[in-house]
Length: 432
Image (tube, rainbow, N blue to C red; front, side, top):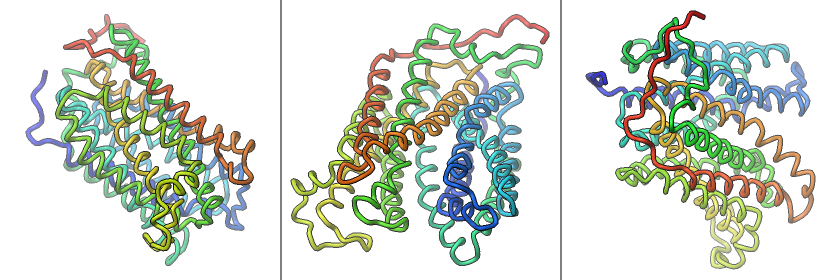
């Protein structure tokens, strides 16, 4: 094994992901309004594809970037992909036709594979025992990005015009690329790289004695992300239907969830992972998250039973009704469950994978997550058609979400400890 870099790049990797997530978060409150402008006139179906195409493209390009980074190193892939993100945002800001919006989103979706490469950088410079703990940094960056980004996008779009946030996001991405280019050391030395004359099929990830366990973890990750994305796609509509909240009020609640996520992944999870309990934490997270999904449509009943004392109080400018107290309580479970399961599953797959294929394995995880984020909302809105009226609103969708997350729990329970000193021998050189 090669020596670690003289200075740990974890801080810079964290900053890279944070800036990336702020840029992504900036467009969340802006893109739907922007695309509905008269000059674009996007229908709801077109808007759905405009949003979803980002995740769909990551299904393809996350493992591809991982494969390339296994061959040429992490740094050039990160720099190239972050520059691509900047170009995508510039095109979105300059767009005057619908096809330009799609072009910008396509370029941004292709470039979005850099998150998997950043994860692989973490795997390169940490020991298996510390890996899941370090992966929690990604959760913290995600949480902070989703707190800062949407708020910044809303302020910029409201004061300076809806195209301005895209240019600001492009500027952030450009600064990010320059930081990586100047300061990030290469974490994947030549001695570990796949050679240009070698074939690097994705099936190599599953070709070791840990292959079945890797597949099981990937499926668990897909199920957990799918269930979680079903909830997030309906959350604003659920709040509007049950509480009469507008987008701003829903944003306050999501910011509350984001702050909880940062505290959980940046503090609690990192402390808990001083011991090798990734599997136990992932199972606990899946269980808590599933229970939260089942409880979400029952906030009225839970509020009446548990929080009747709260009537008349306020929180973040909201009337603190018993029902809202129940919602905020369930959101704690959502943040806790998601904070437990996401970094631990990434850590588990990394510990089951040899260094030679780390990029492809974590790229595959990112691809599975992207596929889940594409399928989850489609499934959620289809299920919504069965109970979109009255107090039962979205109950079926949330309960199916919880059931899917329980499937993730069952899959994690089947994961056995990784074999020590996993390594995948290089194949016999073969000319392509």
